[in-house]
Amino acid sequence: MSTLTIPGREPRPGRKYLYLQNVSATSFRDLFPTIALSSEGPPPKAGGAVNEEVGLTIPSGETLWAISFKGDLEGWRRKIIECAQGRKLLWGEISEEHLRLSDGRYVPLASCRVESSDTQGA
Image (cartoon, rainbow, N blue to C red):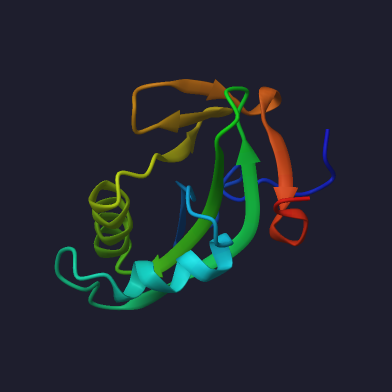
């Protein structure tokens, strides 16, 4: 098991987490800014989103990267999900030691490989 902390495993007041798949040849660091700038839906009223630079690779091989957000929690959640749906990307959130995915799968966190964006593609 990795020594990296899984963002969202432990609740933090005022902050929420979603995981977003990156299927492009670019790194998630390059994809991340397009989320806030995407035209899908109205912009959040307050707060911001942060690339946590931690990914979960599920047993089927897809890697989803953690994004945290604060302020307008519903606005940011909607923005990130609409961005994912518009790009046909898998997204998920942690629920009771599982990663609940947008395609209906529940993946136990214990079966995921935790990685840093520093090791992406390595």
